[in-house]
Length: 340
Ligand SMILES: NC(=O)c1ccc[n+]([C@@H]2O[C@H](COP(=O)([O-])OP(=O)(O)OC[C@H]3O[C@@H](n4cnc5c(N)ncnc54)[C@H](OP(=O)(O)O)[C@@H]3O)[C@@H](O)[C@H]2O)c1
Image (cartoon, rainbow, N blue to C red; front, side):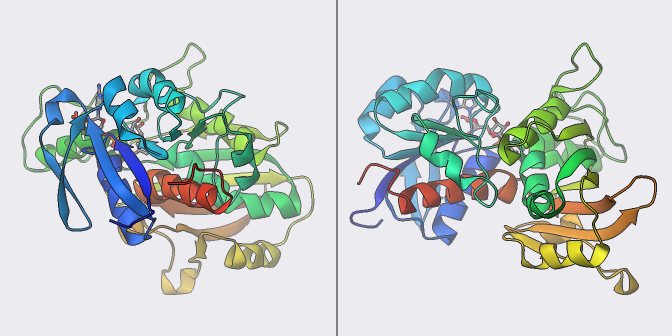
């Protein structure tokens, strides 16, 4: 570990996102002086590996947060855990970057994608929310188009990886592919050789909470409440990342060439758009990468100033861990973290 580095808590360190967070901290050489992995009582005493060292996992509790004296905590242990423990960590002076849905729509809490609204970080009061995985990849691709053409409406259908439902989602697909079942199942139906148009709970209006997250979070991050968003979220038997079919309508005239040029230079975006070579983004190729991949660009002839595109990214990385570590990097660079 680095002398003068930050003390960093990873809460949910044994989970799919927590493990990826430690990998991303290591790969991006975030200046970690001490890493403190926390999880539930079930994992206390287990170890995780960070920079080649085995580190014992401790139980997440008020005492472990207090005794850590950490400058920053990356939380990925679910919304109810975050609701209980993030304010406690903040009380002890630790800045929390929270991956759950607990605080995302709270107007007092910044919801940040560093390529899109880094300025919101300065308005934090100890907790920063990391957006939903499907929202993150969509706004990274759409922000440059919004700046140029002013998006008025977004219609999106998602094709979401089983890893978005955590370790148990992944294990259900793997078991079903071997002809086995898991008890209790993570998904409400079999996922192998199937897809399930149902992620998170249904609301009275027929939308799921996952769809509502995309609709609300997008306007908060884009800082433009006039954008209308309609989402349909679907779980698919895929492991590498989430895919999205997106159609936008804009206030200003757009051309395919102008949209393509903007996406070629957009931060965090890789344009993969050459149908003649069968070149377009796929989750299998996005797995393990940090960028948002965009392709299948075409004008929508059914509306004025309409554009359809296909957006793919690794939900565990840019959709969760990488975005959280980028937030920590941006805060360190702006002097928004306590000095170690
Ligand atoms: N997967 C994604 O693509 C994704 C993307 C964005 C956001 N997120 C969010 O990130 C969070 C974690 O997701 P995941 O996919 O990593 O799930 P996961 O693989 O199921 O891992 C859950 C983690 O939370 C810990 N945990 C559960 N209950 C706890 C408790 N009472 N106290 C302390 N720790 C507890 C678990 O510890 P034990 O091992 O000890 O049970 C484990 O480390 C969720 O809020 C999810 O919505 C996930």
